[in-house]
Image 1 (tube, rainbow, N blue to C red):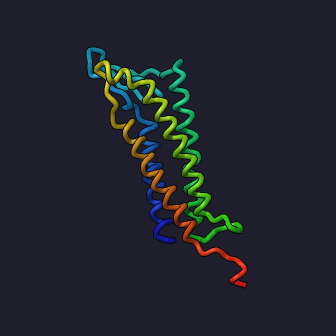
Image 2: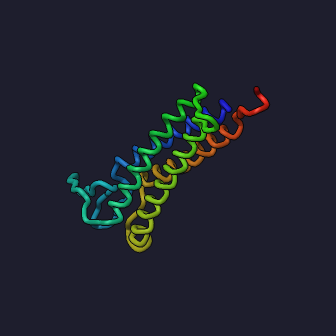
Image 3: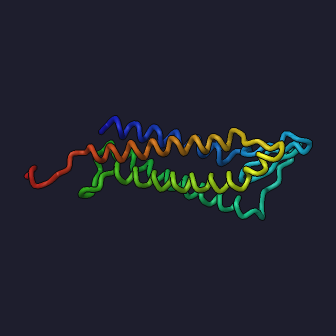
Length: 167
């Protein structure tokens, strides 16, 4: 149980760091062609001049989903820390709450990344655009988030339950 909670907290922290770095940086998409630029979900930079990206619905959707995912992950990390104090309310342990919040966070993260990928994949396939490290950090964050959620849910399942036998 302790090992699962420790693994869950470690993976949740890694996911948070990777995801936040990916969200805040602007190397999601790079054009190596004649119009050299790099962009993230917040701004596009060309020749050391950056402008805010606006007016693209899929960017707004991606931003919203990733911010919601990050907020849920923060709450999941709080419950993950509470697992070390054996916090529970009846049958519901902090491990279960952390796992549930991490599952929701992973869903929003993966949906947001899928929206962005589906809207920009045609540019990558048909021109000199490439996905870059910020984009891949967010996908890697999703992998660690799934591992964290699985670890917490398995830790919850291995927690001894109180019942009539213990009276």
